Length: 333
Image 1 (cartoon, helix red, strand yellow):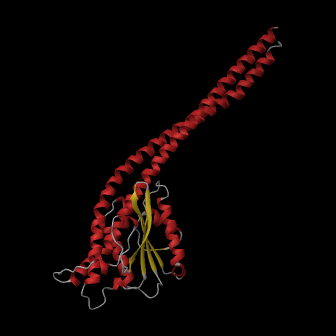
Image 2 (cartoon, helix red, strand yellow; image 1 turned 90 degrees about the vertical axis):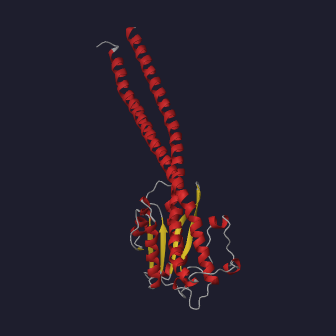
Image 3 (cartoon, helix red, strand yellow; image 1 turned 180 degrees about the vertical axis):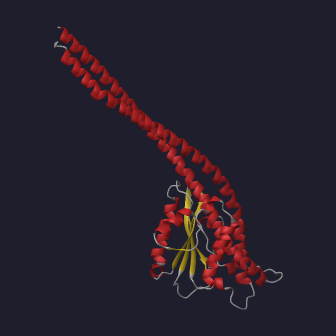
């Protein structure tokens, strides 16, 4: 056997050991780059969809806020200036002891919205720990979840669920708020629960939300104001002092009050649903924008890694060629 032959075999073995690994590494990186590009296209599209939905949700909540505020203003005016000889209404009655409670939790139907849903879960569990631990231990704490994520989260943790409102945001209608209002009022009047509170994300702007715990029943003696309401100029002073002027009611104050009261409960729930819907679209738009930006950063990193691996493979091949050429020269001499 010629002296140069072993060197040739050694060089061939070197090629078989290094080149397939380098090719596999480059192929893996190219595959990852393609996957990240596809993901980036999806997140960019989802951001655009969320932006379009956010515009419609903002229009809906901006139309609803003044109406809901005016109903509440008229109702409290009647409460403080109406000539009611008997109890105002059972829905205003504060129970001496809170044995049972209903928490209406408003979440989204889908994820991919950052901490939108998890913040509501945390806030609800904080409320339970601080105010309703005894009711929970007595089996008198109930959860009504508007939104599929909330329904799944609390049902999985063995909370007592009231009805199933998962998926309501696919086609949000006022009838949903009416149904929730009926359930809350009927259970309160029947003594099933002594308090009803609603937990939701209030739409503040595109990038931020307020986590609100609002008393729903019994209707508070002084109106509850959210940060957005307060910022909008709605006063939280005593309504007896605000409404110094009185009005003539036709047919009478009690009849108008009886019409306004269910509308007040339903419209506060409806406003909370619309606030949450707008907040969710804003949170999703921000989350998808961040995901798109992160994909850009990941693509830069992967391209740099690909170029380095490619350069390393080329350098290795050059060294192998030089080594083989030197081995042939040595064999020839």
